[in-house]
Amino acid sequence: MSAKLVSTALCASAVLVVAGCGGGQNAAQSPVKDQVKLVDSTPAAAGQLDQATWFMPKEPRSLDLDADAANSQSDLIMANVCDRLLQLQPDLTLKPGLAEKYEWKDKNTLVFTIRQGVTFHDGSTMTADDVLWSLQRHSAEGASESDEYVNVTGVSKTGPNEVTVKFKQPDAVFVEAIAGDAGVVWSRKGVESQGKRFGTPDGKDACTGPFELSEWSPGKQIVLTKAATYWNPEKASKTDKITFKWGSDDVIVNSLVTGAATGSYLENLSSATQLAGGSVTTVSQGPDTRVWNLMVTEKGALKDVRLRKALALAIDREGVSKAALSGLGQPWKEPVGSGAWGYEKEKFQAAYDEIGGLPASPQQTDLDAAKKLVQEVGQTQPIVVASDGSPVRNVIANAVVDAAQKIGLQASITQIPTQGYDMTDESVRLTADLFSDDYFISKNDPVGFYKNGASKSSVQWLLRDPAYDELVNEGRAALEDAERATVAIELAKRWNDAMPWIPLVQSPSTVALSTKVTGVPASGCYRYYPWAADLGTKGA
Image 1: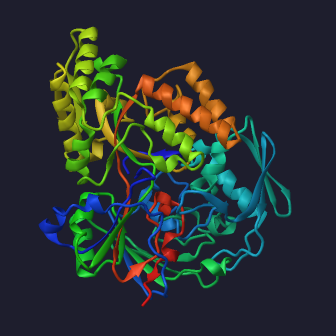
Image 2: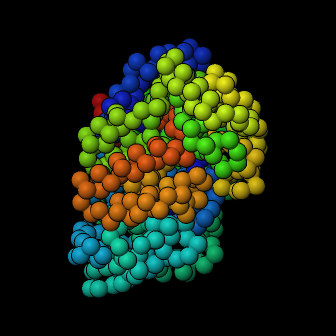
Image 3: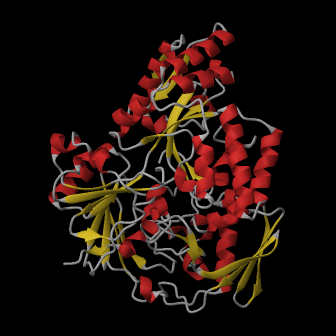
């Protein structure tokens, strides 16, 4: 899937590694932000780990990554079970995976050379036919990855170890997607033989990764065991068995403090402060693409871009970061995080630095400029901001109300139950002017985000510009990094001018570990990279 709602990113110049333990309120008050530095991964493991227990917020709904029910928990687990044609690395670059190489034969023809000697967990040999069938399954109507194949006109086997993808136009973003769920290779026989059991607690996996699915006990746990044979022995797992459990933030923190958990990728950054400051856990952060944004609906007054820009000038992003993310986020001026800068990083950084109108902490000059915009618009109807009652969304909603009042606007908060907090549902969306959400993409390429500004987008409802649509096509078609970066920067400028979303704060990828273990990546690659295979014991 090209992007996911409700699910992290941090500037590639500031991320955290903090030793600590569950220290309750004292830990929560520790100045962990002062200890921040960037890491792509935790230090490499030295020894083999017999077993690990990993916590996550909730149980996955499916382990079939092509199913609509698949979510970020599905990715977290299956990243260790299923290899992709290309592999996203902890530093967010790409390396060969089940494809030993790929080549653009011409601008509309992409050829994958399939690696030999790879076996599925059932012992059968992976073939180009399996790759072909897998890509066709991903692209099928209704599959969760089908949007990544929007420019694909056909996939075919063109040699014993070769699969060719044809496009109606060049599509550089497709290569990035192949390192995500759009590039998973299934055993055709393994999937078809299971029928409806595949992806359910009654099913088995059909993959080639360093772990295989051993058990799914609904409501209790999911267990992976080290694959008996793995095609890449240099990357064989350093952990023999990993058990996934799920629970609330408090359950996760308490499990880490007591030693019942080996680790967790934290979604609630406030939990990180409770785990810092002692000797039982370590907390690490790394770059990602995830940003908390205000998504503007077509409901009312905010259809006028001047009012969107007025609010953007007045919101206290630093305050939101401190109150909602315990100071472990970062005020941010783009709707996608710097983890998307997988190439031409200096160019993207320079363009980011030039963005105006989105201050970290508004000054009087910002508020005066915002008031002027409000006065230009004249009398407006009150603004309604949605919240589901969760701590982060409550903080953001109150920050919006405060900002609106400072610049002469009326604003109120409407509470929507979490299970109904879905701005893609028009009947829900039109109850509010603003919905807050943390949004990430599966690709380290800004074009992979800014294509959401296209007129047919299902996640923004204000930007309808044929010129922007054409620029999206140009960005996807630019196979050279430098050319694509130039287009991506222009897309970012046009998005900012239209401001269909109001960016707030980056939310970094955050992992908490027992001090006895190390090795896993800190960056957001964990959704697609076999991170648990790197988990092991520390050296002496």
